[in-house]
Image 1 (tube, rainbow, N blue to C red):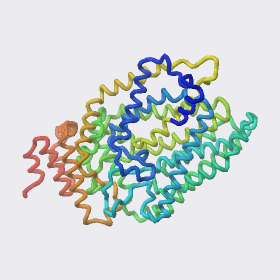
Image 2 (cartoon, rainbow, N blue to C red; image 1 turned 180 degrees about the vertical axis):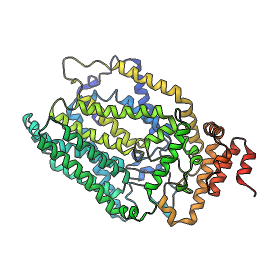
Image 3 (cartoon, one colour; image 1 turned 60 degrees about the horizontal axis):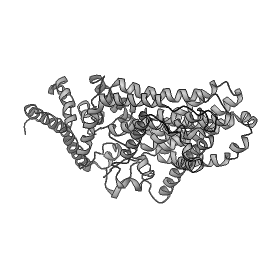
Image 4 (tube, helix red, strand yellow; image 1 turned 90 degrees about the vertical axis):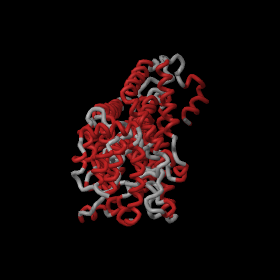
Length: 529
């Protein structure tokens, strides 16, 4: 917004070639505005006191973040004209780095002030009450990983393309900020390690290995520079991850065979795969996974109530179906791959910044395999802005004599795809939204605090009762009734009784059957009083 305002002050209305755009273009802009408004609602006031604030608020409801992504896809049609100026792209890159360093410094200050439980980048133990109340979950680790990879990508490109930069007389301009870039990377890396976000660091090391592989295959730079930059990326990612593992003693827990978050994520993935096997084409409905997941409860999870999977492809496939999940994630991969290929042409300075920004996009894409960064508005904004900046650099300049044609055809096609998707999934989206509004007065479940269950065993029964009442309220909504009715037709009550469920989970299943009008089966499931 600041960059757009700066261009408006300098060039006036000519800075934004919106004159003469088609109604489809303005429809996409209205969609963007709608997504921006709803992304701030209903953010609780408590999020303002946490590091990152509403930008790191995790959106549990899939319908909400699906609408976010639809709006940010419309943003791709509007932002590239703003980023045709290389200076604007450079400012965006430095802004992402400053964001990561600022979040890290604030979090480290909280750590030094005595908050030794968490850095403030993950859920905070509020008011000394175990398990909550937790109205939201902060996940700044994904933002820190994106900022770190953007800086590391720019740094390695500076090293690899130093000769081409010298020929373009851009070495002094970019290398003069080498020290500042190194300091920002150091601060962001320290905050990322202190955040103890294993998922973010897993995405970081995967990105480092992948980018190192791409740098080795890049024939446009000397072989020595390719190997040096690849070694820098891989060693930085590996060193950061190993230091984090040693800090939290995760290796020792894995060697001893004790339960950890990896086991829980594997169990949740198994639940999601079983659910996808029953509803492969259209899923159970956006936001309905939290209602259907107890019907596929893995014994490893015990009493934990699961309403999302720490894997975005599995989450979206279980709620919207395999075809839509393939379409969504293949479009993300294709956009980044095409952008990386197109950055190989053009000036070395533009490629340096562009590939650094694409590294931030890659860490988000790989992070979503082990967590849910797509539900975090701040990560969505960074991903779309970085991609739009890369696309904007490849378009004709605003100062050229022949202006670029308005993207009417692209805007119309994007709007057509969204209308088609809304027609197919609109009822599920609306129903899941009303599910969420109906359950806002119910205390949220706190199933994701696995380690805390070992320390505060007496209060765990009370927390499960909260989750049960929350799920029971959701089971009485129209969308949940449809999903559970389909499941009841597919699976008999005897199939639900195969596993040794906890009594509370058995009561939850009985409440589902009662909500569906099957009181006799509910009484049979509960057994004698």
